Image (cartoon, rainbow, N blue to C red; front, top):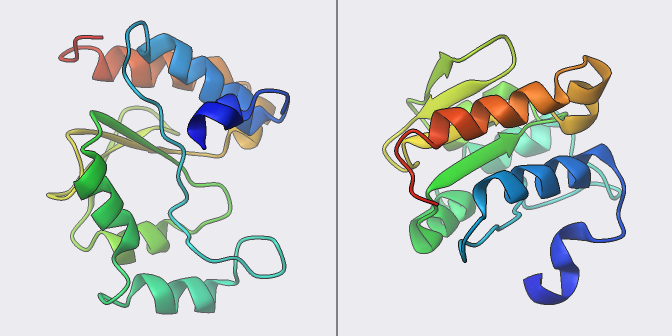
Length: 149
């Protein structure tokens, strides 16, 4: 399905522009780019209300995102959190430590995440704030310190 979707080709939202630009930075070889949602449910075709997210993320019987990361073994993970509260990440990744790289990019330290895991705002918000390209460059330069691409 990823082959046919072509990383959102034909979609022009800030989200897909960000994903494609970040992918081009990292993938100068045959490395894969995988898009995934931390929230595995929606409510009326949008992010569920916080009480629903909280119930799902606090439930250790619903460890989908952690299991997907375990199976896929990515080198880099980037969470574009958008309207999902930071508390959701803290519920899913209990004991998560956030290390600020700047005011909108945080490295995420947790045993189930690769060292190069980041949280930032949704690309639409980054664009409005004039930080779209800066965030892509920061994530790439930080993760590229040890990665061979």
